[in-house]
Image 1 (tube, rainbow, N blue to C red):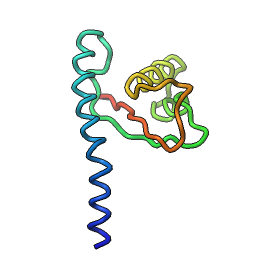
Image 2: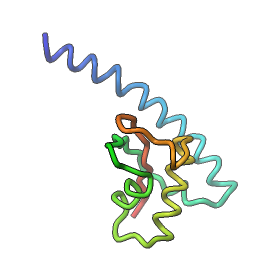
Image 3: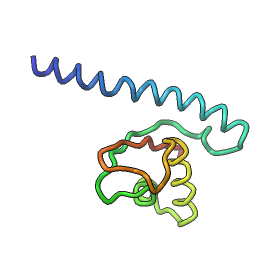
Length: 103
């Protein structure tokens, strides 16, 4: 009974995220073709929990491999646009979608 309840709660929480990712992916693909952004290289989106003290900068930095300041700045912009948030207005306990790119 507990496993069934956990599965149901997990499905109810993850299904809207899946739908959102699909919608964002479709929108981002059409934008990428017109803007020339690297969004067309996105292979997946990851949901990341915002913890106390996190900023878009620290989240972007933690999700890039040996980034330069310019790369972090660009990734912050991408995350902010993807999630329709301002870098100054993220809150602990919320989730952000983080794009994952082809390597």
